[in-house]
Image 1 (tube, rainbow, N blue to C red):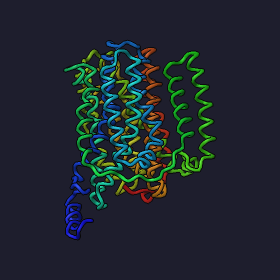
Image 2: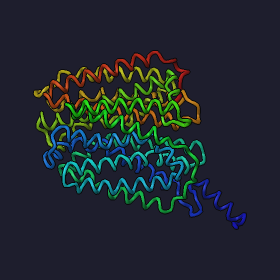
Image 3: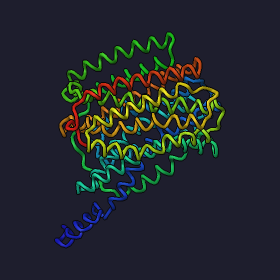
Image 4: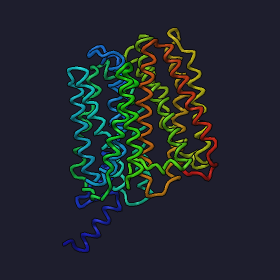
Length: 462
């Protein structure tokens, strides 16, 4: 039994930023969680610049390259609806360690893939593991800090790590593909995964908490989303059959959620106007941002003839400002409410997308890189306030569920955007690219108008 002196020592250690009986530093816990979140965010963007090299090595055409991206995003998006509850049931530290281990092994399998089918299968496993890592890493960071102010700073650092990873993805992908090979974009995950697991060895074990799982809802959601994506990418007779499956699965999902006592996506959640608008806006932003990274990664290399490294560097003006803009957006939302930065951000993104309609094979690469900046800044300005608005619109006990729904919707929208726009550019790159720009701008224009009709500054706080 510990003595009073021992308890006082533990309390003193905790007040200095340490936690657990072994004095495990909260900073190291934050480092592990931040690295885990950054790792899964990096793999959502690092692969785009490497797609032409993957196609040259493994074949498969445009649809195969779309599946390399969407296999990961689909699994990530669909399973994120339930992995928060899974993390609670097994304990955040165990879930994080399990997710990181599987993600690291799947990354090795991606790097060693002998053909495109093996690569796509390994990407699915990566996405499943990423869906576990994300909520578990945030829970682990939150548990490491008892003081609310220090916890808020830690969560902000965790979120910034993800933003930086998304921003660096295209650049890192171009550098690794040029200096090594496309397989390097997956092998680079191995030392990071090993470091995370090393940091977790001394981490205190998280408590298990009862959390209901909606397996029927999760299964029907996966079937519906996968079938819909297949229909968009593959088309033809198989695509129509997949669309029918998607419709049946979607109906089953809605009926299941209406009857479940603890549904993964409560239908009542969307009766709140703010929730419905912010989810729609988040989805539109993801369609624009992730799909344009996909399209212009191919444009720089296949149309303008740039190398993978040059293509990655051309994204730097666009991605380098994202993290700073996220911070500014949070401050604007705190001062003026969510509506102003959401409307301004989506309006700026629309202007940026329409300005790129004049881009063609004769446009200089430097000019295209600059034209991408307004769209990226607009998206970065929109996401933090819409997240704050959604979380403020739901009861505190439903904040985790609401965040999971929002993130899942954003990832899923990005996957569908890549599927749709990949099909458009396969029939004629520049014409398909311009149609993709118009569709993205139209979606953001609609959600921008809906955002304008939200309540004013009192509607949310950052």
